[in-house]
Amino acid sequence: MSEDVSKRRLGRGLAALIGEMDQPVPVGETRPTVSADRTVPIEFVARSPKNPRRYFDEAELQDLAGSIRQHGIVQPVVVRTTSSDRYEIIAGERRWRAAQLAGLVEIPVIVRDVDDRTALELAIVENVQRADLNPLEEALGYEQLIAEHGYTQNDLGEIIGKSRSHVANSLRLLKLPDPVRDMLADGSLSAGHARALVSTPDPVVLAKTIAQKGLSVRDAEKLAQNHIKAQHAPAPTEVRESKDSDTIALERSLSDRLGLSVSINHKGGGGQLKINYKTLDQLEEICRLLEAR
Image (tube, rainbow, N blue to C red; front, side, top):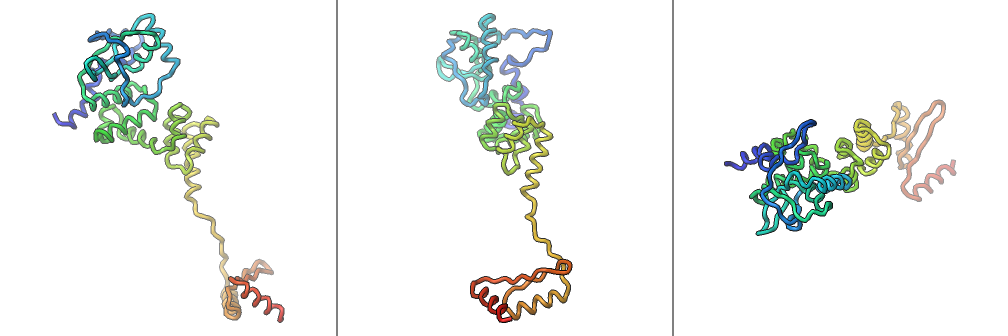
């Protein structure tokens, strides 16, 4: 099977590989229990360092821990072996964390024999399909697959069931400076807000303004566009009024006699005569000529 075909099938085969254990259960339905391959000591299981998910809501973990204390782990954690008695999580890190809070010493697991590449792909796709990632984690996950495994944006779109433009817009968020990324990660900004700031001259200042004022995405886009337009607006230039031929001739005559640049501007019945000098000697010569009059 070619590599490209394998990539295209990854998303469709994900549910079968991990057992659809973390998919939401429709109201009124119950999820069939998936049998574990074995039960292992919880300290023998470790998180994957490449799992794109970094943030876990503490209150939700505590709620899940309470449920686990009462009912146990209903759905096993999906792992792969890293040594004879050590395991790395592919799917189910949230259950593993909650099980530790609940004080469990053993957890049920399903063991899948996959290599490093497939484990990374599954971790990213599983999290994205379940919408467990914040926008920044999602973008970093896409970047991992592109950088480490040569995926294209089209490949990712097919795998996760989203459009190429969705993937492209997610990756654009990685152009933002760290302070804006932090606001995106903690929920102060939505992905829509953040995307509006990518091309602005000072996204940090605008991000704080958006968060403080509680602006909608549409208002944030207008604010960003105004700043972009201001950045590219041409510098104001002095408006030069057209001069008649007599004035131009007089300017030339005076300039020739003084050896300096002379400008005459008429305003109604009066006007302004400007003589430009570059050195103190030239200024002294102008004063001498005026005093001689």
